[in-house]
Image 1 (cartoon, rainbow, N blue to C red):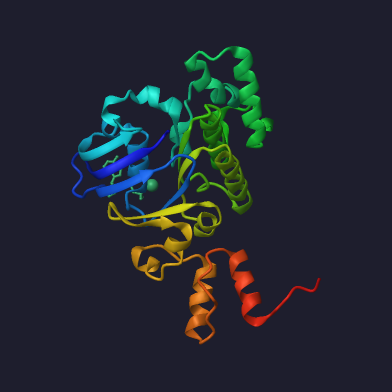
Image 2 (image 1 turned 180 degrees about the vertical axis):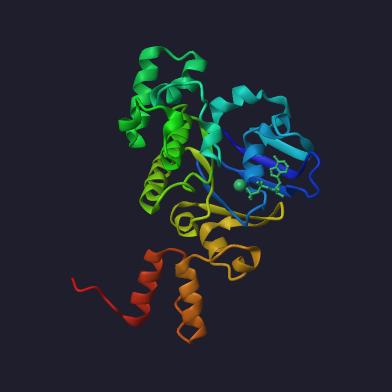
Length: 286
Ligand SMILES: Nc1ncnc2c1ncn2[C@@H]1O[C@H](COP(=O)(O)OP(=O)(O)O)[C@@H](O)[C@H]1O
Ligand SMILES: [Mg+2]
């Protein structure tokens, strides 16, 4: 089933003055793609830590409320065992590289090795994932001698290779250029087609608009908005929550201000073009 349910979850890191999560209730359903946005310090990474079961086991602090994984309280589940079901790509790719392996190939194989997967299967799965992420050429490189973007892809590969049902991905494109980011989103889209549940923290709002089913907005530890991507990302109050509107939505609001409203508020460039064509009867040349 793979559903994660948060009920009135409040968490403060030890010695921190503010609540990192403040009364958050939300249910993550299987096979859906969730985008998590919000200003720095809003609690996005803390939410990821919680979903992966690292709070309160690894990150210490004061936790109240409940986190249920298929109805069982996460507190009662083993953090290591959970890693098979829930993959977590950390915000900082430098913390994800183990430092114990000499090649990217071995690094990506590490998790499967720890699970005792037969060597032939490990080789096959690692090669598949290196191809998927287009990092085959790095297979024999030393993981500690990669660029930030390369490390980010290796970190991602070492999680995908485990084939978890749920993927929690914290800012996977922060070290990548637009083309690299686009490829990561294509891979995430492929994972979605495999019916994975995906929770993605990402600042690139246009990407969130194009790919996510649902969007959550975090501010000061509170879940201040949640709903369909269309609903949340076309909300004119988004900037007051510390998040930019997608360019398409901003353009629609600017046009409306000038007395030229579109039929709705588009959140993607494609939807925006369609609405502009409909509004002014502009058609392509073919
Ligand atoms: N390991 C930690 N120890 C203490 N406070 C932390 C820790 N990690 C995050 N915080 C605090 O928790 C709040 C939420 O941070 P975080 O979840 O990292 O937000 P975001 O990912 O949205 O930037 C911030 O006030 C931050 O300073
Ligand atoms: Mg963060």
